Length: 263
Image (cartoon, rainbow, N blue to C red):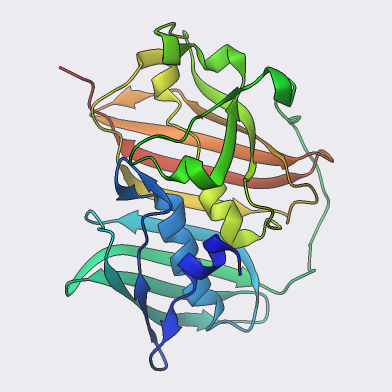
């Protein structure tokens, strides 16, 4: 079993409760990565849905999670001909930490025309991109191969960009086919794009995160771009898109986070 599958598979206790542990293998500065938490919540909902395509997953992050035991409480909200909707809640020490909602459809069903009014982002070849190193309590990068385009990697050396954009390549370091659970993680594995324009900042914690899965990738390496355009009222948005190497759009995302610059 791949490490990611082990760390997202919680044990079923009864009809609506699962129990497991948040591990330290997918952390950012010692905190469980938000995409990792969404993957756990999604995995729990998939166990309770007869429709298995995770079309939309949205999470509200209510308080900080810790690397310790947790319960997932799952509730079915509605069940229809085309979509199931479920809710899952991550509980630690009796307190709700994250709540997620999932919209599920049948696998292999795609309605309507296919039309792209945008192309995949232009990203430099892999051998020209900057691999984010694994260090200290940033354990996510022990397991994910994330490579930034040189255009947006200057902030590592104090060269800031006029735009808040991160783009590059991503895959699991240990071979694993990318499914909806993996896409949850990949949607949150790049550093916040405001770092490219502001350098290291004090605080960019996620408040709300929505991921829309459009297709399952057909390549191991995926091409991604994340952009922030507005910082107001202590909040910043992050819009993301991930494509596979065949030019298929596999994911779009929108994240709202707090923003606090270093004093």
